[in-house]
Length: 141
Image 1 (cartoon, rainbow, N blue to C red):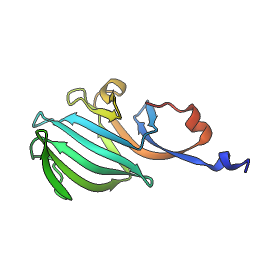
Image 2: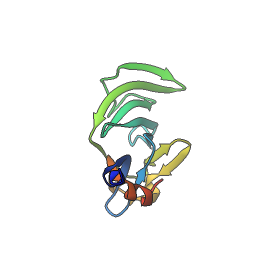
Image 3: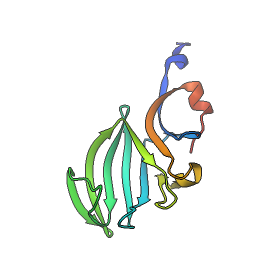
Image 4: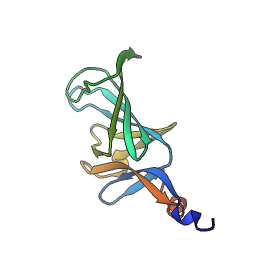
């Protein structure tokens, strides 16, 4: 029983660039940006589940490059096209840009990734299981 904390792992989401990284304790986040061609907002809702990152919903204003085609359901909502999806990823490779304002939304917080990472830096968003001691001392947003 005393050894339990040594082997117990707590799931988190890691956001890691070349020189900077941080963890997210929450199970869900939204990745938002301004589409580089259409100049419209685009939002994707993700969920941490069983060591994967699940894309559950996407919200955008116009169909174009990068629009998913395998939606479970498509509807319009508050001026956005809302697609319900169920796509799982081992990780997300995101290129950060101030021009498209790459931002994470977690609960009621906004984390402008372009303030924390270099212009055009590749950032990986993955799940991790941290040992208790690393979870306690980790860098979180």
